Amino acid sequence: QVQLVESGGGLVQAGGSLRLSCAASGRTFRRYAMGWFRQAPEKEREFVAAISWSGLSTVYSDSVKGRSTISRDNAKNTGYLQINSLKLEDTAVYYCAADLVEYSSTTPSSSRLSYDSWGQGTQVTVSS
Image 1 (tube, rainbow, N blue to C red):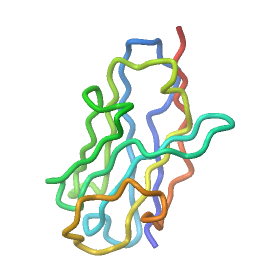
Image 2: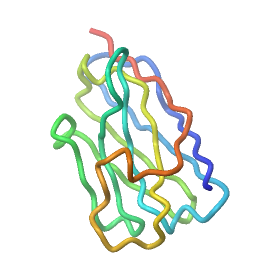
Image 3: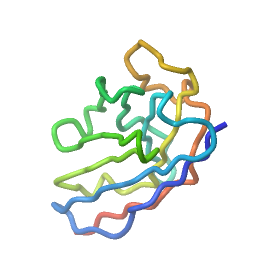
Image 4: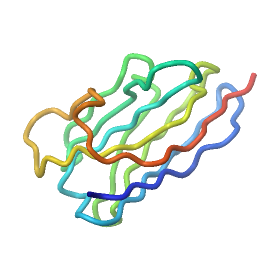
């Protein structure tokens, strides 16, 4: 397993920006695709973005496409999610996750079922 710890959440005004971090330890993070998901109160956990192990392939949900960037620094075992132009509906607990298939050649998955290790989440609250 790989252990994941998110940080960077907080209270932000609508229109602002936030950068979330996901620090990994344990098994070598750089081998695995990484995803970000979020869960708002009384809603199911939904996909936000994913990035391949190499960083060369990224996928975004329609809800954040064009105003979000997922990235990773494998030397630091850390992944990132930048969201700009934050909206009230971005309010949620954000989770990072690792897909423990080593060096996968496929496009990173948008399905929760593909991810094996999860962090504890970080709260993002967007205010008007």
